[in-house]
Image (cartoon, rainbow, N blue to C red; front, side):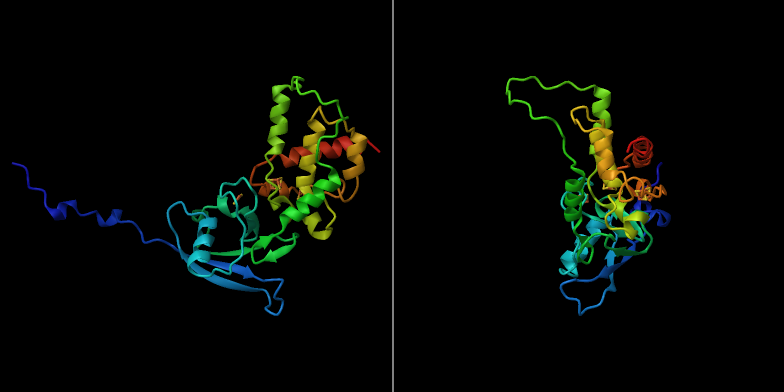
Length: 258
Ligand code: SF4
Ligand code: SF4
Ligand code: FES
């Protein structure tokens, strides 16, 4: 005869009981350039960790339930818009792609250096990216052809299209520039993001620019010859772009020009 199952038999094994959620402490560097009378300072926030929580979710909880004045940026929450980049324990990262499980109990958050500060963790990467883009002319340079709406699209080798697509995955988050030693020393440096753009248009057979033309925009110390090749950019790029390969390739190619 089998023993009757009792309530006590169904009770979870104490060893299997879930540990209580972790309390995270986020020390946020706060400063509002429109209110310079309040000096930059660290403000500590506590938040209870949840399953699969990202740093973006933790910051949103803080802003919703504790402090509506906390400034940080986001749009897509999926690693696509590049707007949530910030310094997390001294390293540039996307908040929406950073699981709190990868962080210690206490972390320090700061805005990306180099870019214009809007407030707290929010910086104006868009303004800098636009200036870089205009300076490097990061668009297709092709002779105007007569508009023919019935013309068949030009064909492109799939492998080449794949290489171009790979470089087009840049989300202009600014992490590579924030990590770059040269960019911290000279504000006119185009950064790895700029090299990636040039590499992309250099590959594109529709762009009629020559290496002489590319040399004219990045062939000096503000460009590829100012790069110290320590490759922090490559290490922090959240899209894992092949920055190391592109920088060394561009440098080799442009060293024979001019
Ligand atoms: S190259 Fe990488 S790190 Fe730099 S802006 Fe693009 S995605 Fe961000
Ligand atoms: S390798 Fe060049 S672009 Fe990349 S972080 Fe170093 S100096 Fe900056
Ligand atoms: S919110 Fe768009 S990349 Fe993080």
